[in-house]
Length: 302
Image (tube, rainbow, N blue to C red; front, top):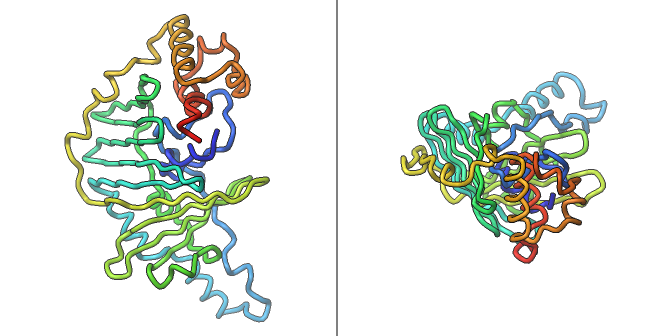
């Protein structure tokens, strides 16, 4: 999928790490469920220590380097209770997405506004729904919780790293850096906190993928509070759409073709995504939405 679509899962946050390309049953970030990243620690500054610096002093330094910052722990604690988080994601190409994530009691709300429309996830009274206003469909989801960037870092006890911090902004912010490493990618997360009160102001994610240039997404924190409005948790915003999973095969084929025609998704696009027309009879909700966001509304995404 297009790299600009990564932001919404991420929206997540997520960290939502989506590989480029669209294959069958792939999960597009625009479906608005935040995936839980499999986290492994990056090599930290200890690997650069010389042989002469090893010993008791090196052990002490290592413990300091592997401690998580107090600012991230303080901020992540907000997500243990009710909260509302609003962010604006700006991609390297200048495109923007607004993300609202909230929790009250056991209920969860997520809404992503992109350049072509809105999508979201809502979980109320033990039942969750993915919904997408661009395609006009929803379906029941088995997701029961959403982990954002800060929570994932703290829950996984990811140690601080120091190889990517932008020193030019160190005078204006207290900066903490953490790094995810995967089989084919590295993601550096830089968190920028207000020097006066320690509040999170923004964070950046720098994706380093094998064979590609680094891609930077910046998230401005527009609001972070310890409360959530009851009006957010109205499931009708999802269930008023078409239930994608209830369609017969012929209904699903016709519906998909209608949306593809509207969005400008061609048969060549389907082929590039790994689909033939008959596959639309049994295509999943996630893959259908992914195809529209990846190949549709091209003028809006340029």
